[in-house]
Amino acid sequence: MKKLLGVTLGILTAIGGFLDIGDIVTASVTGARFRMALAWAVVLGVVGIVIYAEMAGRVATLSHRPVFDLVRERVGARLGLANLFASYLITFLTLAAEVAGVALALQLASDVNYLLWIPLVGFLVWIVIWRVKFETMENVFGLFGLALIVMAVALWQLHPDWSSLWHSASRPGVASGEGAPTYFYYGIALFGATMTPYEVFFFSSGAVEERWQRSDLMLNRANVYLGFPLGGLLTLTLMALTAVVFAPMNITVEHLSQAALPTSLALGKVGLALILVGFFAATFSAALETGLSAGYTISQYFGWQWGKLVRPREASRFHVVVLLSLIGAVLLALTAIDPVKLTEYTVVLAAAALPLTYFPILVVANDPDFMGDKVNSRLSNAIASVYLGILIVVSIATIPLMIATKGGA
Amino acid sequence: MREPGGPPKSGGFLGAAAALAVVLVACVQPVGPARTFDSYEHKAKSTAETALSSVETGQLAARTAKHDDTFAPYLAVLLSDAENEATSGQSTFDSVQPPNNRSDRLRDRLDALLTRATDALSQARIAARRADFDEVAKQAKPLAKSARELNRFVEAQR
Image 1: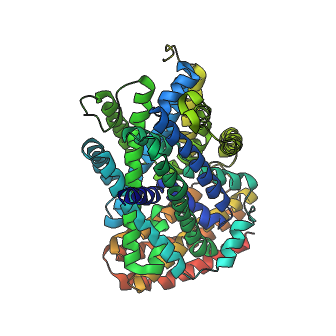
Image 2: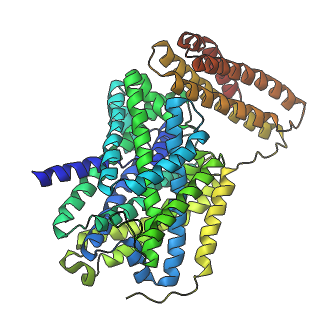
């Protein structure tokens, strides 16, 4: 019974913690602009993150070593360092976007300018990372993130034309007035937002921190196979909401405030209150995860003591990296850089950087020295190899598409 | 266990630095000049579409105020964002040099529409900051008029 409760809690927190500022922004923007014609990119991203996170979780559980430790060993110190630099940069930019996202969520509830909230948000993120237990932190914010299920109720309450939504999702194509490069650019944005690298750093490091054993592989699979796809459904729901409300009026989404409007229209104050709580929990939880991931990547690469289960004194360099990353993210967010644009560009670059960590994990997941009898099956390898091909194509296409479309303008 | 470290490959750093540069450059989108009427008209249409999107957002906001389906702080932020979007579109468009007399006339026509649109959004935002939902709801009418005008303008440029 206790085990079942643990599995259920894990799945619920995986659902609640799935969305972040990247998912919220890209789903809202693309739903309003392309209706459901880019739903395939979310599905592609969810399947990808399921494969990637399951492998990384399994590798971390069986080897008791996290992603960057293995990346360094597999690709060597030099290439590993370049890999670390790119991955850290993406995680850092994501952290800045999440911190700005939390501040924007607080602005929506208070009408106090988000720039004034940013230093406080940075401090709160740091204090939670410093003082709150890993499990408590993960569960509390994951469960509060479940408030975003209100979006599904709002969609149902709006009585949309389900067949039209399905038609738009199942027969994707470039809408008139839009160019193919812009369409695919936003496809990459959605894919990158769904398959963010920090999620895997956090997930696999969590498996090492919580000392998962072989018997916990079932928990790993339950979180990944159930929690992530259900979390992905929330992304599709938000896309559908803006497709139903904004697309017919040719409204483009430029601000986080607009993402909450369809729910307010459908469910009034209760719906609005819940979605604002959900936005706060989702972005705050992601800020914690990215803050920790910044520390994880660097500490794991250099072989320093890391994690929240050891006393801060024993993992001082890890905590210094987390603190400095947070200060840097706060300073970047305080430059008044448009948080929505920053998020859009970060998720696209995240997609481009994915092969850097995906490939070494795929190699280790096939190494019997680490995995014993739990190496990838032929089927997993076939699917994982197809995804490696997709990631390489995405990685090559991203920057040219970004330049050609002027960042999706 | 671990391979000895060595100097990093400069290619990786250059790639990452290039990626960061792309982000920073892409975040700033300067407005190009308009050398012909067609190019100017295209910019006018795009500006009108942005304003129309803001006005339509304002209309939906007014609807939530009418039914008391919202909170004043959220409504104020929503309307302020819509107003800023429209205002920034207008000031960007106004900064473009019209290439000829025909463009001057187009500029005057659009400017009048944009000013009416931003005025209505400002009134709604001011009322929302005072938590005066009735006044916000009253702006639905001028916003709807603005939306019709902008829509006609966009259609005319097709």
